[in-house]
Image (tube, rainbow, N blue to C red; front, side, top):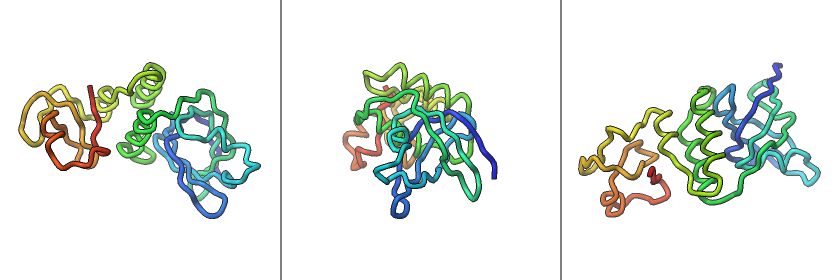
Length: 176
């Protein structure tokens, strides 16, 4: 059994069993991880308020058959706006577990601190993940003026193709 202490952004939560939850974190030292939080759904849980999505936390983890959250302390709490929650969903979908990336961690911290009152900017996140829009073309019509990124297919689209196609609009990310 190994114990770790790291900074993290809470991305999402899922129910697990009667009282537990699986908490998705993007950590400074491990990248994205899924950690079990025991008894988080109980009304007496001391960690429940700290492990809400969009909180930057200092977290203590124990690794034994996966990660388990032992302690957490929220250091910064961001508003639960649709744009911020979509940004957390984007980070969760576009990263792999246990793949730490210091550049990505710094970009996440900077983006959330700089864009807390305006719409989240995905351009720098995409660049760090290897999807630079500088030389990108629309996947459908080959125009160089891309404006959207389609998450499931990891491709860029221009405005007209994104608006005219039968793509689920929840899967499109506006990059400018």
